[in-house]
Image (tube, rainbow, N blue to C red; front, side):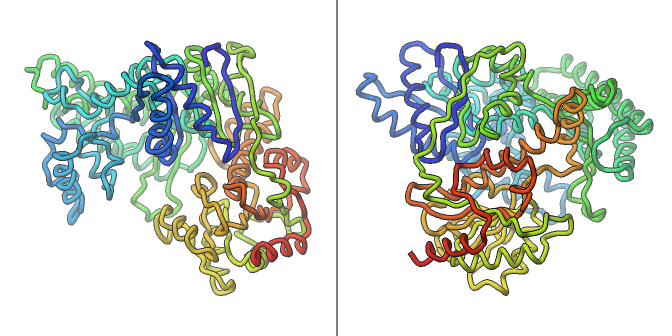
Length: 621
C-alpha cells in the first residue's frame, strides 16, 4: 500500500477480501500515519465492516500492536441531524404548511424527540426511518452549513464530532459519493489520507458520474424561491420566478431524451435563468455582508445561496455543453419526463453529466494517493483493461502505474454450477416476454422445486412473468414491489420453495446461501437501452475516435451486470445450482464470447433436458 503503485484486485465471494485489506490497513496506520480510507458503494457493506469485521479485527490486533486500533464511519453532512436547523424548524415541519393532511409534521416531531437522546445524530440509527421530506427539515448539506465558527451549536455538532472521531481513527469507512465529493471538490471533507481502498469498485464510475451531474426543473426553481424568501429585492425575485415559469412549460412539450442541439427557446430560457439566479445570489451576499451576524439569518442566506449557485452553475454547464461538435463534447444534456403525462410526482427535468470521469479520477484521486480497488467483478472479457480505462488508470498521465490481480475463488465453479443458455428460444423482442420464454421459465422453476431468483431487465418484464406464472407454478412467487426489497429477500431466504422476481437492485447485493436458491434466471442480456442518454453519447464519441462504441460501452455494461447477476448463485462452498440465461444471443452472437468470458467458469450447456435433469436431482438431494 505504500509503494505508490495502484492495485486492482478481483476477489470472489468467500475469499475474505475485506479482512485481506483491513488487516494491512490497520497495521499501516501504527504510529503517526494518516488514516486509511475504505470506500464502499452500499450501506450493507458499510455495516458489515463497522459492525462485524472491524470490531473483531481491532480485538485480535490489540496484542500484536500493543494498542486497540481505532475505526470510524463518516458520512456526508446531510446524514446527520443539524442542531441549528432543529432549533429553528417548527416541530410541525415547514413542508407540512404546503400540504394538507401531510404526515411530515408527525415525522418531524419524532425527529425532535429522537435528537434529544441520540449520541450520533446519524440517520441510519433511527429505526424505523422517516421520509426524505421530513429528514430535510432537520438536516443540511455541506454547502448549506454556516460553519462551526458561526454556528451557536458548533461545539455540539454531530457532523463535526463524527469528523473529529474519523481524524483520530486508523481506518475510516465512507461511501463512494463522499469520496468523489472530497476528491473532485476542494477536499477537507475526509481527514488527511494517503491510502484509499475502494471496495465494490465496479460501482465507482457510476457513483462519481452521479456526483458530477446536475439537473434543472421548474420545481427546483420553486424550491430555490422558497429558500430565497425576502432576502433579495422584489424585482429580482419576480424575474427568477418568471424564469422558472418559462422553463416549466418548455420542458413539458420538448422531446424527451438526449439533446444533440440546443433549442433556441430553451437556450434563451436557460440564459435568463442563469442571469436572474446570479443576480439574486449577488443581492443575498450583499445583504449577508451588511448583516448583524445573526446565525439564523446566516443559515437562511447560506441555504438560499446554495440553491441559487447550483441553478447558475448548472444552467451555465448546459449552455456550454453545446459549444463543441457532438462527437467532441465532454458532457451530455438530456430531458427526462414521466411516461404518463398525468404523473405529477416527478417533474420534467433537464440533466447534464460528464461523458467520462477517468481523467478527473486520474488527476484528483490516483495522482494524489495510493489506491486499491477491489470487487468480485473487475475483469470483463477476462481483462482488467475495460474498467481500468473507465477509472482513468490507462490515461497518459497515469502511465502503467497499476497492477491487476485475480486471486480466484474458493468455489469449484465447474463442479458446483451450470451455465445454461436457452439457444432454442427466439431472440428477445421489444414487446415483453414471448410465450416461449414464459413456458421455458415455468419448466425450469418446476424442475428446481421453486428456489428461483428471477433477474429481469425491466420491472415490466418482472411483473409480466410474475402475473403469468403465479397461476401456473406450484410455489409461492414474490415480485419486487409487493413489499420492501429487504423484506422480500428475507421471505425468499427463509422459505425454500419460494421464488423471487425483480430487476436491477436484485442483480447486486442479494446474499442467499443454502438451498433456498438453486436457480438464477436472467431473461435477457442487460444491454443499456438504445435511447439511454449517457450510453448512446459515450458510444458516439468512442466511434468518432475510431473505437468500437458498442463493445466498449454497451457490451462492457452488460458483462458487468451479467457477472453480478450470476454471482448471486454461489454464496458458500456448499452451494449448487444453475444460472439460466434465456437470451440465445449469449451463444449465437460474436460478442457472446466476451460476455461468457466475463462470467465465472461454470460448466456450460444449451441442452434443456440436461439442465432440467440436474435441477431435479438438486431438488431431491
